[in-house]
Length: 312
Image (cartoon, rainbow, N blue to C red; front, side, top):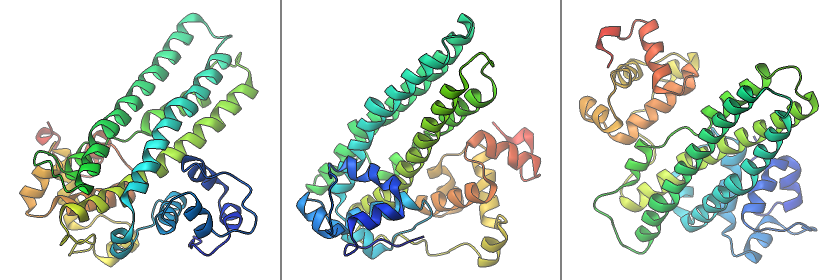
């Protein structure tokens, strides 16, 4: 992965990854960069250059883990600005385009087929709207108040992490339905166009989640507790990491997940922090390729880590 920096030309940054045009758009940065650097353009747009670079690095590589120093120096208000504009883009641009293309694609379908496809899409749109409404109405105001020195004793970023749902899964199912299950009578050119839109949105949402998980959450934790360290004290064993096998601790966490425990309950059971639980769960997902609790439960049963009778 190319590491971006503030002294590179903005045009060169886009040449490396044209998908970063989405980041520029959400910050209101217009084209015509000339030979100006990232730093010069960011300062013109009242945007912290280092925070912009941080977003670009995570957007380009979901596995990029910023150092604690980078997170402490970042401007969290710029992160909130980016997330807010992303929410607006998804609901008022991306989903509108999907809906229009789906409408054209399914015109030749039978009424029953149209109904189930529209209902599936409507359910996904409602789920996404609820997800973003929660962030706009709860998380962003909480962080803004933190920046003003106002702490809500009944809320923390751990609660956001605990309830942070995966917003790409149903979109992936929609992609599979369009790819595999629509009748041949549908215009294949429209099918390909719609699939391109879905793939692009899925990748964008994946980057959005990575920015929340790898930037927003640890930055907020550093504000909530200045003595907090973003790296867990006990890292996973290097040999397990190389082989992609679950460590003994990760298996223990997997069993707890399969038994229906929440992150806080898992942390209490194993006498570790919630942040360490979250780190283990991310490692489990990366190693198994399974994201949902239901999927991880089946994985645990099939591999003999948990008895089916012990699962709720």
